[in-house]
Amino acid sequence: MKRFLATAVLSLFVFQSSVNAAELTRSEIRELAYAGDYASLERKLSAERAQPLVESEGFFKLRRLMSVFEASDPRMVSFVAAWVDAEPGSAFAHSARSFSLSRGAWDIRGEAYAKYVHPQALAVHDNMIQQAIAHARRALELDADFIPASDALLNQSATSRDKSEILETLDRVMIQQPNWGSLRRSLGLAQQGYGGTADMLEQLCQSYAPLIPSSGPDMLFRCRYFGLKRYYFSESYDLRQTMQAAVAKDPEFDLSRAIGMTDQSDSHNRTDEDIAFARKTILEQAWWRPRVVQNFDMAFRTRLGGRSLEEEITVLKIDEVKEGLRHDPFNSDLMRVIQDWIRLQGQNGSSEMTEAEMSEFRKRIEKDFALRQVIAAPFSEDNWNTLGRFQFDFFQPESLFASDPYYQNAVVYSGLKDRALYGYLGKKAHQLRMLEDVLTQEDHPDILPWKDYARSFDRSGLVNCPFLRAYLLLEQFCAANSGRGYCAEEDFASFAPQLKIAQADQNCNYINGLSQEELAFRPVEVDLSYDPQAHWPAVE
Image (cartoon, rainbow, N blue to C red; front, side, top):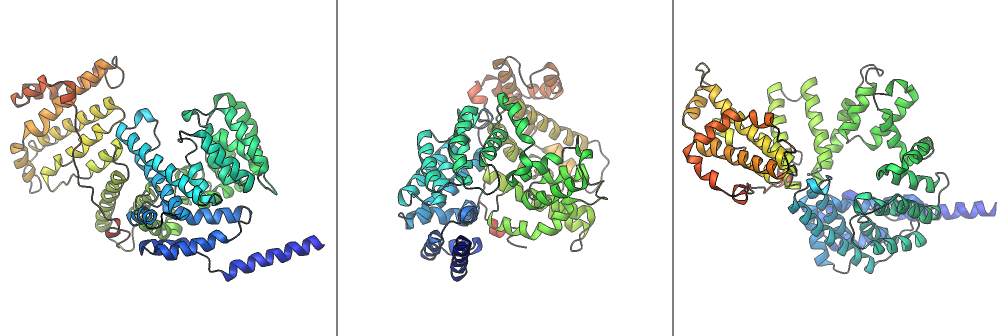
């Protein structure tokens, strides 16, 4: 009884303390950051830092507040960079800078295997990650017990070159402030791609999971399952299958269960209770992931009487997505949700726009988002190809070749040169066919400008010579790689007519004498200056 009363009094004290102190919000942090108010931000974060960490809630709140500095908004990125200079003795500033650098590094690199990533992207990524680690170290030197500071270092558990540093940090945190978030971030040590093993995962789980306070879930099980699911180990298949049955006991894996329920091969066996659980979980935890939402609809839309979760999200979440993009304008997940919303608006009819206005709005947003993707990840073949496609304007025939600099950059930054060169050849052949087809069509006001252009465009400079250069590069690639890839006879045969024309063009004779290095495409400089605050949805 006395213990109960003491606990109640302590709880009341903690509650009262939290009420008396004005709680800091993510929105308030943004306002202070955009205003460049370092002093007020430091003061308010210090007040939050002084609050006791009440089990998982305290850790979650502090982490969520600090995660606001990971945003891609140029205003936030520049503020965080300047903050470190203005307050070099601030653990908050160094932690924030580490988060910001890490986010930017992975946006630039992407998630592909290293062999498919352009070397320049890997170099930029590595440089930014090393800077992120340095700022995390400094933050820990300034405040060794600040959880987001240790998070900033543990986030690099897979990529860090000093694994002992990660283990020492984890060991200290788990002894002093044991929590699942810190252990989870450290499991990257076991990632196979960075030299990890299943044995290492087991050692981490056995050493630290039992230290985490839990009134419900088995933390050792949680650690094992999370690691095995995220970092696939073939020798652990049976173990993972056995553990799968126990997942329902831990809310940590609710989303994993919900996504598994949308597997169409087994969706007919799901109960109404299963469907309700999957819908609720996805709506709460993965509404911004279009593929997850679409899989749910494909699996259960018919059983739900035609109700679409995707359409429901566009109604419930669109204002939240817009607000998210205002502060994280290069977030690809949020951009995809917006594009789905626009598509559904077009299908269902908009109450605010005519069909023509909606079509124009969709094209403008898609082109704008394609530019944002290139700015965020400028070494991505797909991003350059996508942005290139949006340069074409039917009412401006010369725009047919406005895409060329973007397509050339796509080849330069490709991780699969044979595929990229084959695609480039196809684009050149398509451009020529369009102009040749135009000349066979009847005269029409919309066609006449195209006919004039088709009779006068620079065939050598815009089609034949670029085509021949790419063809020779693909031949050299195939010869050096024993014919693997887009190197079959039928692949080359499809371009025979175009090749014959290009080879007969005397203006392109100089290409035949070029070395492989001289033939190689070079990056084309494209103006990527951009202020997201001058574009939708910041401006509506």
